[in-house]
Image 1 (cartoon, helix red, strand yellow):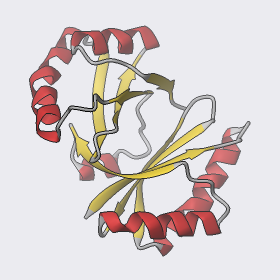
Image 2: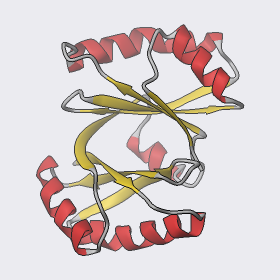
Image 3: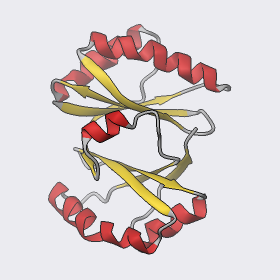
Length: 176
């Protein structure tokens, strides 16, 4: 099985509009022989991040076609790797979502092996910021960027946690 990240810009002004979008999206994803693992929307309702499980990474074009046929504008679909959690855990906790999402545009010369070694070495440092709980990361297989999910009481705590692990923040979103 493969994981794919779908990024969708929204024009929503109310949470119900995003919920309706996800309701429309779910059968479209299923029609492409995939299943929604989780969906997260930013607090301003402008961006929806959806992770799906598919038979292979080649499902991206059928997914794009199915979503486009449902009038869902897709910005990007990319293969991702889940780091820091097990897929079954993510599925089981889908309703209990993280509060913050950090996007990090990865350096061009980074390899997956180097990224994973760095992640393993730096992750124990989160203990220095006990008010922040790291939940999981989806790193794109093309190493364009990664999405890191956190629970924390405030943005400043997430920023401090990222400083502790020496990882930049390119975009920081509070999640709805």
